[in-house]
Length: 367
Image: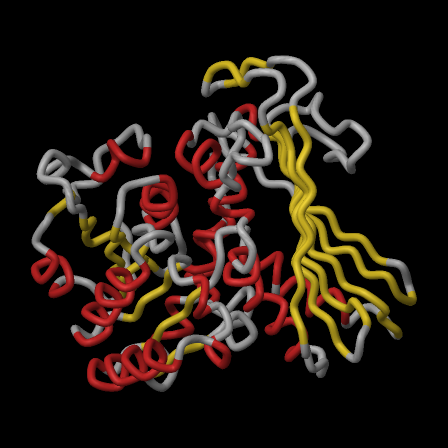
C-alpha cells in the first residue's frame, strides 16, 4: 500500500491521465482523489483514465471541496490555455484550502517575477492563508527548457548561445484540438487564411518567454528583449496519420523560434521544429531516432549537445515527454511541503529533490 503525501489530480485529460498513472507509483506520494467537471466521469475509478490494469479504489468526483479536504497537494492538470482566469481561481482555491499545488497550466507564471502582478498577489495571498506552496512548470517538458539548460551550462567555460529545441513529428500524436486548432496542421495557408493560435505574434513569447528569462536569471544574464521568428511549410503531398488524412497544400510543418536578446545578441533560444509527417520539410533538422526528441544545445566551450527521449509502454513518444513533465511536477511536492508558503519556480526546486533513502529505494522496479 502506498504511503506518503496525498495527491489529488485535477483533470482527466492528456496531462491528468498521465499524472494519475504517475502518482500511483511515485515514491512518497499516494493518490487520494481525482477532480472532474464532467458528471459523466464522476464515480469512475481513476484507473480507467490512466489505462491501469488494476483499480485504484479512488474515483473521480465533481465535489471539489470534498477532494481538497482529503489531500495534501493538488496536481492541477486542467487546461489554462483558453481559460487562464478560471485556472487561477481554481489554483487559488486549492492553496487557500491548505493544499500545495503543482501545475503546467499558467504559462505566465513559469517566471513569477515577470508574471501579471495581480495573479502573483492573489496566489501569494492564498498560499500564505493556506500555508501552502505553488510551482508552475511546463509540459514542453518544462525541465528541458529551464533546469536542464542551466545545469548543462555548468559544464561549459564560455557560452555564446543556449538553444532548447524540440523536434517532433505529430503523425502519432492523437490530440486533434492541439494539432489542428492550436498548431494549425491541415489548415490552409493562403494570405487571407487565419494564422494558427500558437503561431500568432506574442503568443510564443507568452508561452516560452518565462523559460528564457529563467535561464537568463540562472546564469546571470539580463534578457532585455524577446523576439519571435516563424517559418511554415505546406505538405507537398497528402499524408495519413492517427488523426486521419492531411491534404497536400495545407500546413505540414513549422519552425518556431523564441529568441532572448541581451545587449543586441541572441543568447537564449527556445525553438520548435514540428511536423505532421516526417516527409514534410525534410531539409529541416530531424530527430535522431523515432518521432521526436528534446535537446539542449550550447554553442560555447565546449560545444555541448544533450539529447533526451522518453517512451512509455504502449504509448507514443509524446506520452513519454508528458510523463517526464508530470513527474517533474510530482517530484516537487515533497520539497514544496517543506518550504515556506509562497510561489516557487523551476530554478528554486531541484530537478531531483532529495527523499529519505527508504522512500527513494521504492523507485527501483521489481519486475
